[in-house]
Amino acid sequence: MGYYDWDGTGSMMSWAGFDSTSMFIYMFLFPVLLIVGIFILFKYLDENNGIGGRTKNKSSIEILEERYAKGEIEKKEFEEKKKDILHS
Image (cartoon, rainbow, N blue to C red; front, side):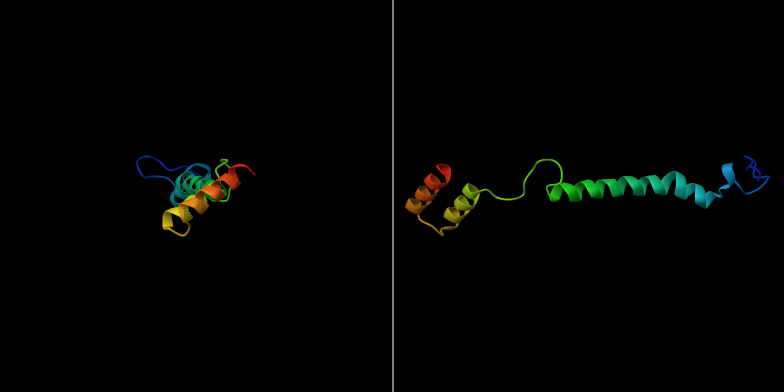
């Protein structure tokens, strides 16, 4: 097991016996894939309320406001339900 000389002579092996393809995988591709994998994991956990404390579920008030905005309920009904939600 030799080392790769700067002038191109010697063996085609680099340090520790890795060839250039293995060096690319271990020194560049593997860390990049690891970082991307960790990023995807955190994004998945965040979307499923695993971390971050943010919730994706709508509150009762938000649902009520959406129904009122869409015209599904009248103002009087909206006010009554809002009052019920806030005082329960």
